[in-house]
Length: 271
Image (cartoon, one colour):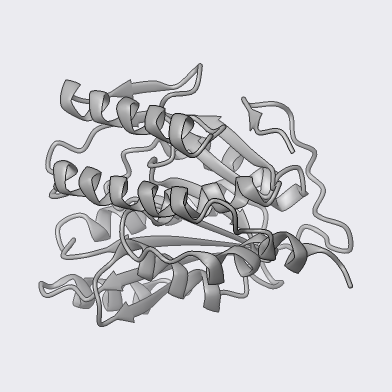
């Protein structure tokens, strides 16, 4: 199926057999915030995100802090936020890895739509509703924020810009990717799609996003792109060179295994 790009109108209707829940019903949206040693940024992120969701979504939501074996005060900050807000939960992992954290939390979540965003809030939250709507309505299976799609507004250094564009060009050339930005930390997926794809995802680090999207594409799933406003976090501790090298290893692995990946499509097909 084709990749859907742009910010087209989405009807406020759920997938067949469902309905939009109010705040007293089951959790509709679970937003995961993966963190590792983020004692300085976590509280600001969660308070800002919760305040935004409280006035922006008509259904029940949850914010899950996925702590990737932090060694600083992050666990204490997370527990304090969970004690203060009923909508906040903490999921502690004893091993590092953003992909590992997302896979664990998404696999355990009972929410209809599973999303995640980076703790630095580099992506403007104004796009969150547009991100969630496609998987919630059934318009698409996966929705991703894109800093490279037409209409996106991005502020970041030349080094990160060049690496990002080169990486996504490699994905289009080697893996025939039809989406523009694999790495933006702003994604949402329907629960059924996650349950089909997550068992197939091998990476536990930063390549998790790319692998999930390539598997979705190979299985004919619909990927919706949302142009975002994005401001680079100058204090980020992510080693972009080491991450890029690890990502290239992941690309090579997926190229070697490109003939597999029909299992998820079969899993989504009703018996």
